[in-house]
Length: 356
Image (cartoon, rainbow, N blue to C red; front, side):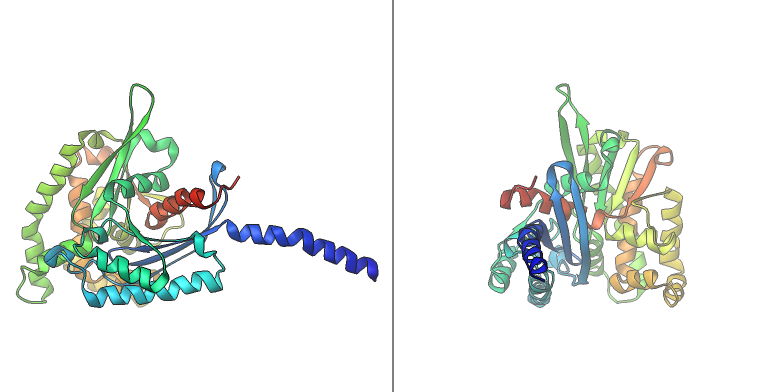
């Protein structure tokens, strides 16, 4: 009996440091995005080898970017809703998931950073959590997206585009003469939420027919801005593969082709064209499908028909502006919604603790 106690005590002495250390390897991020708040918890157990395990990921909807494109500011009501969500989940991550406070990061996406009153949100986050809110710009966000969404073997032959709620961002990598990998960013100041708000501002009613009409008349402006984006970085148009992510692309793929378990799922421009036609002319098809398909129901609870139409318009215009698009390989990057956040946490984690 004494031998058992001695061995058990020795077991605890040896095991306890390992348990404590394992918690030091757990990191969490709270992203304030244009269309919602995203929480991610990851286990970083060997950064140098890229061994990262996503332990948990969830979202809560609040369209904080609503109003940015028309008024330039986030509304007080939406900021307060966001703070409530952030506070509740910050406590959940710390208390229930036992993530060390120093290992939790709160960031704002580039779409939210477009607002003029970001300092108010920074102050509210600080008061609620004691944490500093840091915003990342579209260039850094695009770089992180490429790192997290595109397989390394495809870096040189691909570009990434992420259609978010507040904006569209991405980029590509080129190898210069000294064999250095250089990232070239792409960005567009429209996302599914901001484009919708710009169109609604010009409509006289809530009727979907009028919205469709105004949306169609807005396409020349959207095409002009997409063309300017590509002309600023023409090498992007020569890439053989196009990886796409973001809420608008997730909605398209889920509604039209169904939920996928693959990290990268291929599709054609024709699929987007057909999906766009259903959105604008036969939306009841998706509403009926949502009654029996929980994944479709999730999309429709996240995005209204107007948001979906705007996201589809951006997706179509971005693809149609690429020469010889039907010869390109198009991929939906399933993990795009958390790729840049995971990349951000991984980078920041090295500043807190070196993990080998």
